[in-house]
Image 1: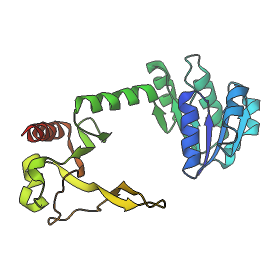
Image 2: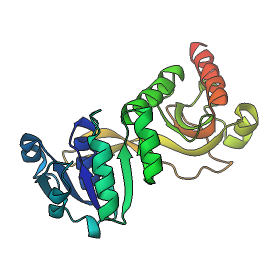
Image 3: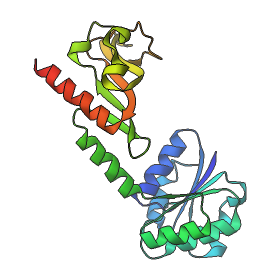
Length: 234
């Protein structure tokens, strides 16, 4: 995709580099020449502009863009002004960062496609990870449901998924299993490498060290992790 990112704070900078590294054509803009210099070799094109000046946007390929992301985080109205200008100049999908509830209201009224709150969203995800003690990583689907990586309980090792009645006992669906397997690298050294088993079958046998990628409710994942903790003690 051709993506324009406006605003190179910590969030905008990281987002632009990651989007570029995953094969997108990324064009970035910011008023800070130092930031432009810092990122220019990591994206397709970097331009220094005043995001509140409509004429400055002529240097950006907004008409040909698939997506425009306004990542400005300052609470000075610049993100709103930038969004208004971009909305006027392109039919691309627009994602805009909001710094307050008032900005949310204005952006909703402007009809942007998506409003993001990076700090709040990260904090909520990190809080979920802390509260789900024992989980390795989580991806929130909605307020109740998660995709979570959890270690296999010792009590399950050696059993098949069918024998364990996993879904019945834990009310969770196993999406896949991640296993460590030993490989010999180019230097002849034996190293551990994570491999995805794929879609598990009822005959899949749990092995020590398995990481289960499960889908279910927050409360059910907590119950499983409590079971895991008690299983580890015994």
